[in-house]
Image 1 (tube, rainbow, N blue to C red):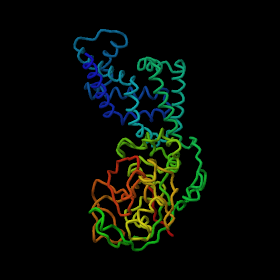
Image 2 (image 1 turned 135 degrees about the vertical axis):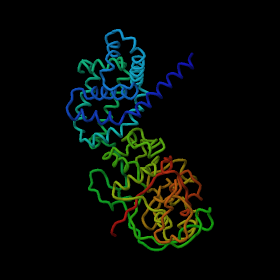
Image 3 (image 1 turned 90 degrees about the vertical axis):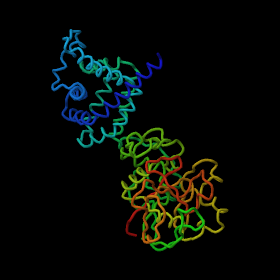
Image 4 (image 1 turned 30 degrees about the vertical axis):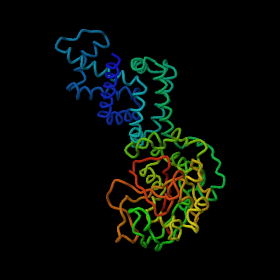
Length: 450
């Protein structure tokens, strides 16, 4: 009996999820349109329109009036004509399914969050932020005191939730968070001790005028030796290539730098970054949209996909570095296995890895920079670069790029948990662009006049 009950509940949830997926786009558009028009009950209007669409598709009706007998039975206990009893049974099944699932927080909340990015985009598209904020505050008042709801609204709330506190609290929390996402500029970011990172990384701090070159160094164009003859096949051949001059960040992007951007743009936030651009673990170590891990604000931001890294850099007028650009910086005008005399023995002076990290990621710029003034190219966190992964093309020697097609993108640099061999400038790894890992971050590059 228990197994049968669990199976029926699971089946109901799957059916409801499919219905939401099928019918949500016009509901969002209608709802925001009603809010903008100043309708007294925009959500009720949108739900009514949704019901008509569902009944048209699932019951084959042409007009809402065709369900009147079914509605009268539910609301007033009236008898249903014999020729409509099967029809009304199907009507009841759809109504009961929706009502039951919407009242279950663990069903409703993830479904809502899955489509919230679409809601935010529609709000921006219809320029409805202020109107939606007024609606949110009215609904919060309604949830806090049911007698401050309109009569129709209170009736719907009672039918759907039974005034169960857990369900009401879920609705309340989602509304509060939606308001925060609509007005990110009003959110107070947590205070962070910047220590001497401002001088080492030259980060742009909150409240200061943004200069795209701030926090970056210029790398002169010219030839350098790329690849290796001693490593795996994907590092071969060792050959001379040429890259044009470019700018690159001194430091890997930190949690705090990422937070400052998220304070202005909700698109990249943990709860709103579209699921198709990550593997489900995006910013996994953040406690909330604007809450990086406590005490790790100045660590490299990790659990970011290639898509997120690219979006962030592009939004600041920058880009991800090419694989060749990254290796030119990491090699620091040398040709050996490591970019300093003495080889791996002196690696602890320049990067965090398995031997010296203590099993932890560290804040940016604690180790010695290279001669360009760039920190942490070796260790602490792997770095996404722009290129697709593939074997090197011998003919591609001038500003080389990766393959034009392919599923995987390149990672460079090694991380705090890796052996010394992984921190060689020539070493390459690959991963899917949707992948987010506990030890993968990035830095940005740019094409700007010197």
